[in-house]
Image (cartoon, one colour):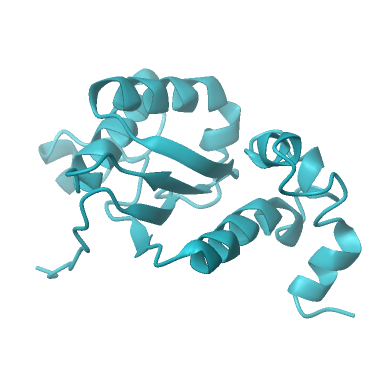
Length: 176
């Protein structure tokens, strides 16, 4: 069995990437309201401050800050993933192992996390998160993607409305 090492910093700020098991599926945007409900339920029982988020068809990125003295990301993600999965119709293929474990075949078991070190690191991760729909070709401008906290950041004066428009995204992908 793999030995996954997690960083446990009470009150820390973390960047996450969480993927669907089957990357060709579009469950996260097709059932966006169920995903929002799962986040709300998790925040109600285990509070955290969701600083930024982008939900794409098959994965999501987010940055959250934990309360002082709390370092429990794992239970929050378990609650979000299970809440979303339980609300979905049972349509996916499941391996015998997942059936035995009474698991749905929705999410990859693990998630990727990064402990945000400082304000510059936070800015870079929030930029990465918000440019993602443009980088993947889902929207011509960051503001056009409806499943993102980008507009909230524009309203706060952090970004201009035209930030991450298509020419900038081509440059981010290394295209000319």
